[in-house]
Image (spheres, rainbow, N blue to C red):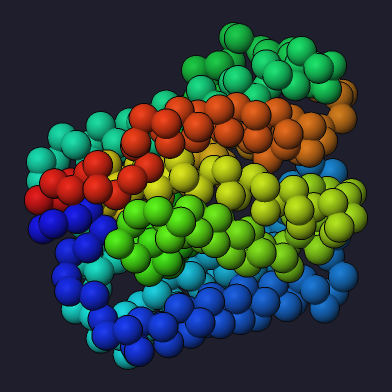
Length: 303
């Protein structure tokens, strides 16, 4: 294999150019269809501490499989690019230790970024620490259990964004084409969340003209972290693990370490807010300056 993103000859340009819009159309349509019951009933999330009900959980789960379904349909019926597990990097390649280390990094790096973001928010007076150290072990076990349960859902997302879209936009993985792949995939990933943003899902109580740009910034910054995990291992699995941590354990950390009565505003704390943008942006800058975001740096990954 000559490239960690290229395991088979690319599809013909005509099929490839058709595949991307078809993928985006199916992924976006699937998200809106899955969220339609909540949109119809006028659901709104008013607080970051509010728990979601059974219907909300069902709709979210269905929506998260839309990108994977779109990728599978395009690879199988539009591009006919080869074996699905190879094209979408749905594998555990040798040496296995590389992927295993990437999975551990997928836990450690978002955890460190979350702590850094909370530190920045606390220093700015936007977050009040009040941790209960006695129950820390139980909480950590609970978070790992929640992550294990949620893992299949995040395969539903990352098979689409990291497995399919990013490699298609990256092309030969050099120059402005690579920059576009990072920005374009991150923006597409963010705007895919539009139905949930309109219902206050990620930023409760905020208007759409605040939440949509905030989501775009956050996704464009965090996507290179997931891509780095995917490139260094030659597998989409570590990216799935990292995404699962960010959307479950990272959010849970913000709640667990906050003062009980403090207002939680995701725009000002955690990885979804500006403190997280600073922490993640600094880490992504390090990855970029050291050449770790270039696919060519991992030419032997996944052999």
